Length: 87
Image 1 (tube, rainbow, N blue to C red):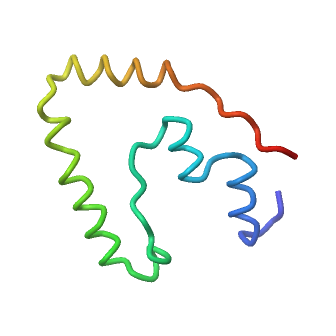
Image 2 (image 1 turned 60 degrees about the horizontal axis):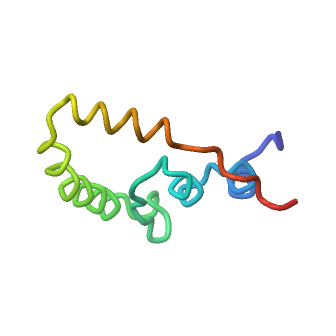
Image 3 (image 1 turned 180 degrees about the vertical axis):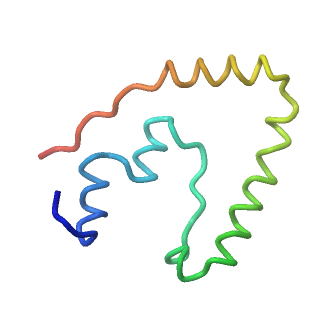
């Protein structure tokens, strides 16, 4: 739309595709913080991602495949489109 990436944050907010908006819509469960930007601290960010997965994986592994599928279907059927931000 703008022909550059200078407006990416603004576009993500207007399209409600940023991490917080996706979490509010029920699409994203966890947001792993970038402190301040994952590209500026790749090793530390990767460790945070790994710790997050390590914390969440046991719960998922405890479910049988059928239950995981049922929950996933239920979740995505319940997602509604968020209201557009005020113009």
